[in-house]
Image (cartoon, rainbow, N blue to C red; front, side, top):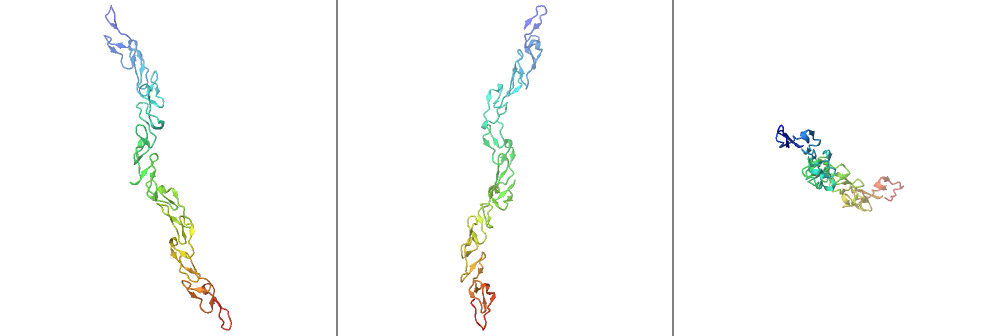
Length: 262
């Protein structure tokens, strides 16, 4: 500052104050006699002499009025974000703003097992043996179960993880809710129960052999359907005298004590 020759009072240079001009302007003021108000926004500080703004990290512009452009951060917005898949970062710190389901500084890791969502702040609510989707929180249920907590058995006609698979069994076959393997009804076999039992077989997977005699054919329960002229559990008996036909239900109509063919 300059000293007034008449009064001895100091006349301070712009940006300075005090009896000896040794103190800078109070914060928020600058220039001649510290009479100018700083125009810096977002907590930026102005130079006590020039009024030029020094911006806080994350802001730029002659008055610190602008947030860093997407992909940039820090003092003067001069640092480039380094986030996975080009995700944005915090304009002040450079910390990556991860999408739901991702974590780490660069957002290139899924949430830890048992957590999901934004910042991986949510806990999975699945069974202890189940994990959930890192983005949606949907449970990855064990085969044969479904539902938010994996406590519901698969509905009829479905199987597998989260019961997403459709059973392919036909002819009344039922599929295993875990593996999808078909349990065929009697008289059918094959991967999808698509095949009828071969002649003279019946039962589960057609493993039982028919015991019908004289050309009798067994049904799915192994019961014999006898040809005309025979009867009995295994078609082992000829029709009694004076009877003939299927199941021996017809009565002979021969005269003079003649016999009819069974």
